[in-house]
Length: 271
Image (cartoon, rainbow, N blue to C red):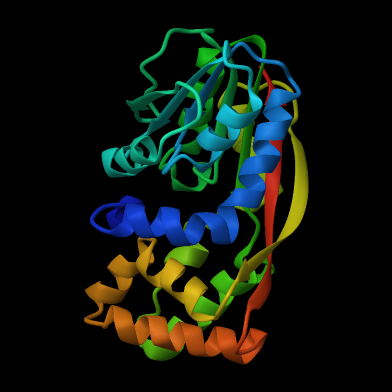
């Protein structure tokens, strides 16, 4: 599936809105889960790719002993700037890096972790090969990806609402990219192409996304993700798009606090 360059542009006000709105809405439950899985393996050196604004990094900093070295990387400097500004309770090395060309030595990490970043990699097999390269023998690659959009209720509602607002050219960012890499066979094949010889363990995990009003998830998705690029490229008003999404979320989930399903795959594979 062709993907516009704007799908990976997290700039301007996006990092702040992403971190303050979207992170608590959908990312925090899975960040805690991934951090606990990593801590159980008792690593001494951990690399995080596609760290974004640092929700997993903060979770890892809470659960890993301080002697464990934690390196957090992302392709987009504005996202890392936000992560570093929020900070962590223990030292972390923040470093701009492309997951397809990691600037680290072979076999230099016990764990490579990635939360909801693999969907954005233009060459997934190459990114997985790089993760494998920097892992020591016996190390683990652990990442998660969103399940299909129909299993993620607020994202689905936003996509449906925007299709009604732009019927001639519906914005499809959410379905195309964040929720566009949910096929288990494709994930397994890409890992094999990346050199992993053991079949991955893939666990599907449902959670709940909660907000005090329908407007909160509407703002998070329409203004705190690259979806805003598609809205403005169509000459749309962010305010009008946000209102349309909030209206459909309220119609589906109520006018007060809202509660929707989210679902993701958790992937673990040894080096």
